Structure formats: C-alpha cells, structure tokens
Length: 122
Image (cartoon, rainbow, N blue to C red; front, top):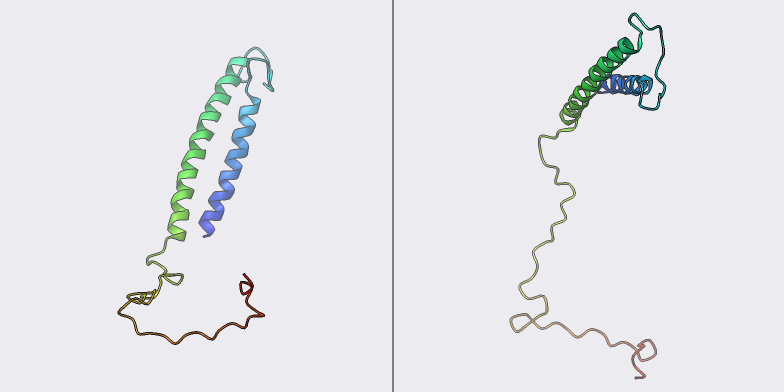
C-alpha cells in the first residue's frame, strides 16, 4: 500500500509540472511564454524545443504512471473469493401461497370489532 501512496504523490508532482510547462509555452496570443536572448539555449526557438520535449516527456510519464497506479490498485483490492454475507435469497416458498385446493384449511382469523373496522359503516 505504501507503493500506491508513493506513486500517487509522484503522479501529483508530474501533473503539476506538466501544467506548469504547458503554461510556459508560447501560444498564438503570446501567453505566458518566456522571452530571452535571440541566440543560445533560451532563444525563442530553443525554449520552444525544450518546452515541447519537456511536455512530451511529462505527458508520457503521466500516462505510464496512471496505468501503473491502476494496476497497483487492482492488486491491492482484489479478492480471491466471492463474499456472500449479504446474500438476500428468499427461503423456499410453499407450493401454493394462496392456499388452494391442496392446502390444509386454516382457522378463521378473529373478527374485527365494528368500532375498529373503518369499512363497517359502508
């Protein structure tokens, strides 16, 4: 279970880094792109290449970590047997629940007094 928590923290860090790298990229409208000198590593072209590669690497890492986390969570929560503690199957019912011709006659229930019967006056 500690592997799951460790990978979850790494996943969160990779996700935050991915969001940061995406926000630093230059968009059509300028965005939050980082400027720099016209030559060198952090020129417009060099920064774009670096940020594009970083985005691709972080995206692949994010997807791979997602798949690994799914596999680890399945391993941690898998059950080898079926739990039947909540089995709600009904006990076997009598052959004729309405008491047809084959059933033994039951005693008549006690009559309800007239003052307690709501349908007595109709």
